[in-house]
Length: 226
Image (tube, rainbow, N blue to C red):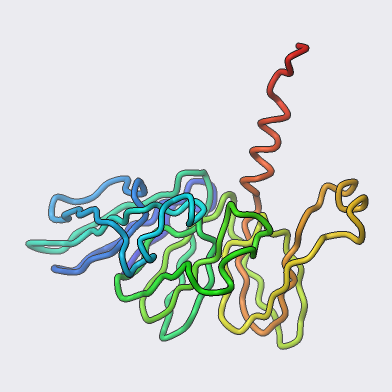
């Protein structure tokens, strides 16, 4: 998959260039524009994500959109729902772990699985899961806010608020725990759960949190007494 990422980091747009007969699969609703040579097919996710529903996948759709260039090369523009950055990794027989809501598009050769044992409970709630992406090909993923990449040396530890985790490479060990000792300290500090990563490997963070945005919006709503 050949692509360019433009207008980073606030309102990123991924422009994917398809050769004749080449295709890419993407999250439904991500398409901004496409050339007349690109055809769209929407199908139920079978082997791609095990045909699981949106409520199970924590933000992933029950369907997938497949774009294929016919009669010549094609161009496809993709963007996430929330304002923010787009990242790209090229996997070569590797494994990459991605927050479910961060998936944007991928080469059809990549296998994306939400049913492996480590998917559930990573974020401490039923709202988000980890996707395991394996194989060879390009993967586009999104962030709310800007993306920050952190490279960890062997044995190096790094703690990240679970609301800011986007994805990480194979080889990193991780454990989810409370940010502060004791629940009172956790509540008083405003910090919840963190994921402690241990290198070697790369972890991708987002500079903003969807959960923090929702909590802020709820706090602005008038109460019954107002």
